[in-house]
Image 1 (spheres, rainbow, N blue to C red):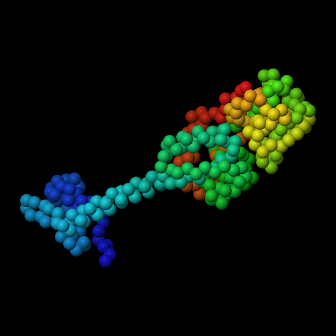
Image 2: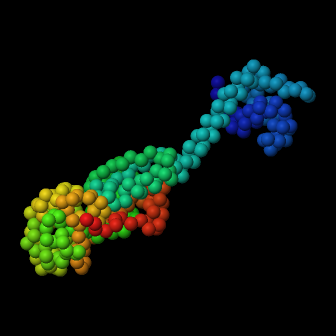
Image 3: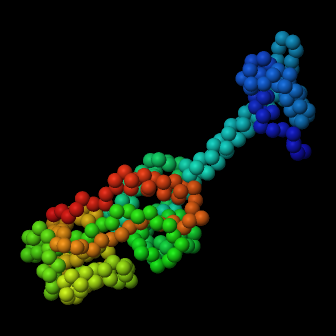
Length: 310
């Protein structure tokens, strides 16, 4: 049998009356008149098809049917309230799931701090972290498998909104025993003929081209590339082994390798750009919350490195 006439207010009236066992007190709690309360309860009994309350001028008692119905009515109300609150939290980005992409470099450049801030603000959101390169992260967002990503512009695809982080100046990782490591800053001209380490162009064509252009325009020469390396942490390890020197971001200088010294480039140095990216119009509520946290974080003075050390 389908019960079509029972609504949440009718259940609330019955539960409150079952708790008070007094029409006047129950009506006051419900902010309604006694006749209205009595009519609501009577209509509920008719819909259920059972007498739920024994009442006379002095007493109100639950019947056996009323005792059983109160248990289920109270549970239904509690679950309904929980469902409403859960829906509101989800709509406000306070629950659900956030699929957050990031590049390896951002693990040294703010990603952990941003995720920690977000988790502290929205503990009810499950955060899935996905590590990949910038091109793959763009493809993942287009495919809808991740919601937002920390990556490195310029992007090869259009249709993304970007929230820029402060750019990072690149510094040189130099073998500790090299003469250049004794300088407070390294003139670009001193790198001529020196064995040079750099990431492959396909891994970051914009940064690769800007580094090569810097050598050509500011130094008048091309670097002596002895090895291409997959990551900046690998570059630091190779520099410590004496294989050569190369550029890393300031944030990477937290890697305290005794075989490496980090030195700034004299004059104009290349920078790495980082941004939070998302596809407008497809942003989930948790992703919207993350973007809001990121805006506050950047406005509060996020910095992505303390400069060269060692």
